[in-house]
Image (cartoon, rainbow over the protein chains, first blue to last red):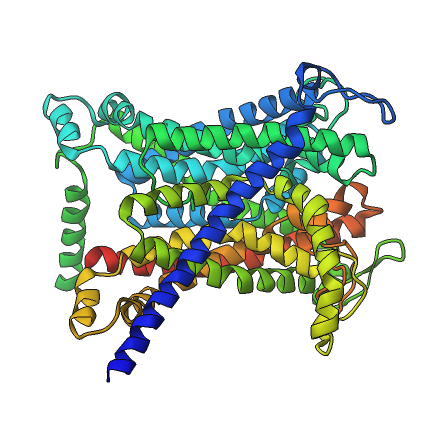
Length: 282
Length: 326
């Protein structure tokens, strides 16, 4: 009997030790990725790299300034399109969406979240690039905006719902029309959460490459307006990485370090400062 | 007739009680409600439009080649031969491989985080694991090209030597191929499996676990006997959700899978995935049929992920509802 129970205790210990190892492995993957990118990228980052244009292949030096600015512009325009739609849709879900329509919208949003980003790029290609007959920064922003909308929407809903009913009722009891209650009381109260959700969505689309391959397309020079191809950081990393040139590989690591530093800093920063940890934005 | 009248009256009461004050809705409130509802409907319209646009864009392929497009295996754009099977095969096998690696690791980590680790440690670890999900896939692809591919290449001869009796591990050690793609995909989906499984495990009612512990079970036996079965459907949801991710993942896979439209038993051979072929060939499509076939592959990918995500959502909804109610 004693041996039997001993065996059970050993199994208990052993299996939990194994699960701890699993957790350790998952965590060390993150630290390894961050450490290795820093190790390879740090030596190539200098002022010239972030302020200059790429040089022709064969010459050393040259920077990725156009990609950084291009990324900022494409992501910025995408946020201008995506955030308002997501926020107002989220307000609808939380304030009026406890019915069948609300369920359908929630379901559609969750399904949209799961659609691969390359399919969204394809959608933007069919929707914008084919009718206009050329690649454009605008089409890249459209693709990224569509990826962003469901994430912002579900986040906004979650946070608007957290606003206590008593606050709404207090305002309503004073005779304030409901739309004003929502706009002036509910949304400002939930604004921290809404900002967090939007920033997290921005970090998600800032690293997207696949939807930009055939929409904003990339461009080795300064961009020329919204209707022309534009460089973006993740896309530049991709083209440099698959090129056969040592010099471009070096620059790809440096660009990767800049991108990952931005994504991790904003992601971790917003989650630490603005909200307690909940689930992955699924 | 009276029955019908009663229903109408009930409906009237129903619709009135939905309004906040029970009075007539003000014009401004109604306008606002319709305004925000418009944005909600946009989401549904968007989801429908994605499918419709891809269907329209790929019409040429469906009319010219029909359904056999999906199970033909030649892909030769110059000869205008198009069959999507090699891509579907590569996508499915690399994703299956990723699940095979990530499920035990992810569920193991989740058990540790939900059952063993103190709440604060667990929260901190979850925070970090969520950060792993934020790493852009092009960066994992970059590490794949320069780190994982050479590593896999150096291990492959050993694999062939010891496991070569299986057709899965035969062939030339290229480094790029299904195995490498599966490895990199497993890193990408690991956070999703871990975080969702942890959430589901935390939703298991305490009373159930305590009942089993009180009967003399060890902690591990409680996990296996109560927590995992209770959370089964939620874990399945997490797995399906990650599968949806893996199937559509583009950049990292494109960079390490080898991009060869060929069906081979061996995991060491280069292959191709649906997302990767779209990424590589769309801008250089050599004709209308080629372009339309690539969009058709996109539509297929869309359809697969919608079905898989739909199922995953239903499973997760079910568990978290039940957990909240208990």
